Image (tube, rainbow, N blue to C red; front, side):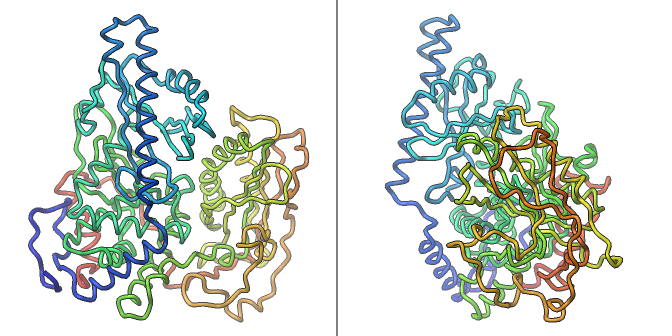
Length: 590
């Protein structure tokens, strides 16, 4: 049925009633057709040949881990029958399991093995086996990660391989990983490893239309990458976070098609009252004893800025990395998306306008540049991964030490200077004072101590090797290195409406004072000083950190933290989401 009238919905998805049961109009069908064409033309779908290659690689990995488990079973003196029955199972999760991966995307993979094959066997014995396989390159174990992982390429396909040892002597090929019994008598890292697959399965179970969900998610992941807000490690949102947000919108509008869902996604989340949580189902307690997200019991949960709760036991906040600064940036980008979608619905814009790249290096007057160098490519890969995982801490430290008056925008893209003779990578952060702050003439932000503390924490890296260096420096917009721009040329600054708006003529003509005490950048690959805690001084002058991106009425004001009265029972969640969404009038434009 075509039209805006309500369509029947066989059952309720989610913890609240839908906001609208309206189906698509003829215009919605046409917009969805154009959206699908745009996504195909943008190259977001892999070829049949690449899909077949992925299947072949997963089959090869399955055989390798089964042989590994059989080898350990034999070495540990088990019977011949046990050796014959010994098994390991490969599951996928993330974008591949959800069916929204694109060309060149990595495959998030989980190996489930028996109780007598532990995590040490995975990181030592299996690592040794993989290192001897010709098709395996760029092998990088990360055993101390929040979710321990082995990263590598197999015949050119990027693989992130996790391991979970469960309380079974023989793992059956038809293991039901969604059953909570797999969590019996396992440690928390194992729970986190298992829950990637369990969460993906629950997401697909809780959406009204899987194909509409997939198209919408594929679209919004592409949008998030273009707008610089796709990165869990940097403090934005990763794949599972975006999947959960999209799935909740699908529950709100069960009969909507992708073009409608994209528009309503921005409409809902520009008005969402964070830190009220987004959840697909009620949080349930089990007798297994694992902690679930509950701000009534867990004080740390009350500090979360943007709770997006996973639907599989034990339910956790998947977006705990989000900070005040990154939530502000995402809120601004939701406003941008909402404005463009309104123009598309009025036939004043095409889909391409929604995916216009965010002009990060035109958006701020001051930046922090973090240069990472190492002696070779392998060392840089490991060193860069460690430093990148700590960049979120630098954002939090700056927020803490300036009492939130200096706002940071970490940009989740890495750059490399081809002129350097050593292996090099660079990250950047935009800096600006908080809108509305009263600043005294000549007053400055001195964050040298903050950067010192950050560098000291980074230099605690246990696998540090000679040649691994990090330099942090303050740069003005006009000093941004050319290698960050396409083809090495800085684009001409052209004023435009919206998120990339440039300063007004009055602002541009304002006298800018010199940044006293700003350290020089370490652009070369010179030998590092003996004092590994040395740091370039960083002082940011208030007079030159002027907001030049969004108007006064678009500035995000932080919401109060989740209170003690927060309840996560099914009934309370219904009331909470109704208060969050219905009171904002989201239903008035279904």
